[in-house]
Length: 106
Ligand code: FES
Image (tube, rainbow, N blue to C red):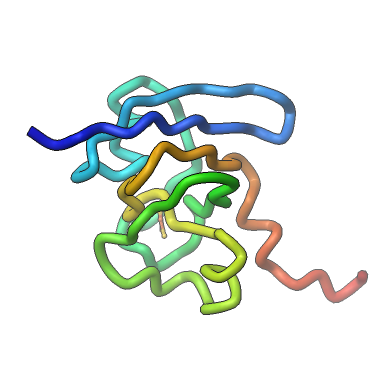
């Protein structure tokens, strides 16, 4: 029996959903089980579509998070398609990927 962690998903617009996520399940899998839709693409850590930002707690990627650079990982960004919780977490979700894309007009 694997311990589950409480994972709170927070959208910028104020929506919040709480999930119970076993340590061997990804945040995306748990959200899907609960009927919570999150942005998703490749499901293998390659595209970055599912990027979230861990505001509290910790996650571990079950395979190399190829879509994120070291500085993104250091800043708390995570790929929710391959991220398993290692503690209770609060994670910013929604359009987080746009944080990582350089805006040439800024
Ligand atoms: S869906 Fe592509 S990196 Fe997660």
